[in-house]
Image (cartoon, rainbow, N blue to C red; front, side, top):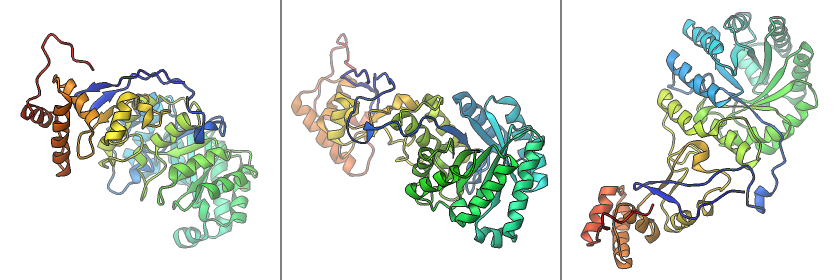
Length: 421
């Protein structure tokens, strides 16, 4: 259960710190939180530095990669896909240095091409992630090859990686648009060749949770390799599909911080980790209290702004303006927040925002915080000013609030009187 203090601390105008000590287990016994035994474990494969960097307009410098990798490593991320070593000398150096400096397993990407594989092996990564297209449209119009050639290249690449003593991950790219019988043929071939992991990528983001779960179950039945999933967000289903894959028996999901990546991006690191931790009550081993910090660093280095309504890490994720919601949260944050996830758990802060929808409870708390001692009538008068000001799409600041209070003749508390927070 949670230990809950009934009064929420108020910080300045917009932030509150909830004195809530998160303990695994929940106090909500009904609804969707009633069942939390669908999965036993879930690993995290971060591809922010590889697929995430493929976001249009994004380019991480050597120092950027080292900084992001360091945080991922310190948080306990299981695998860090550091990049595509054959891509350039700078990329090779970054991958090599990350591999030597982190305790997480470091992975390098490689096509089923000898030069790619040798570059990945030379970089010193523990895992080589090799991939080849398996959908007919990509085989014919991107690779200009045949199905038989694809199988041959896949097997030869897996064998080369295993001969070198590295962990091998194989991906049949565009698996969710691949002929099922042929996909199973490829999976069985690389399994026989000795691959350690098989990643099932929803390359173009066309999977749905139910269909993807069925696919992963079928793949699991045809290999003894460990299964990993890589899902894209073209229809906003990436994290849901990743979780469906884990429920179906996959051991690991590939994710990126803030969802960055090709087109609409990947399953989000922060969404996946917190869903596993809070909704499935499964310990990932990740230090979730650094999620907000990690998100901010990636936002800065990638040049991609994080939307305010982004789950977990958006500015509005733990913000409240509505009078009903703010009043409830002031009494007990579990009223209008998930309860099984608090801002403290991800290193964020709760904000009580004033504007068009603000109610008297929130205004009173802020007036008291600012040192005022308002009457009920004065609270109502200031609340009207706040609502009118917010209705004009203007941000209500501390200075605005104090001005409204002074115009309503609200008296200040005596200096010797403690301000209740």
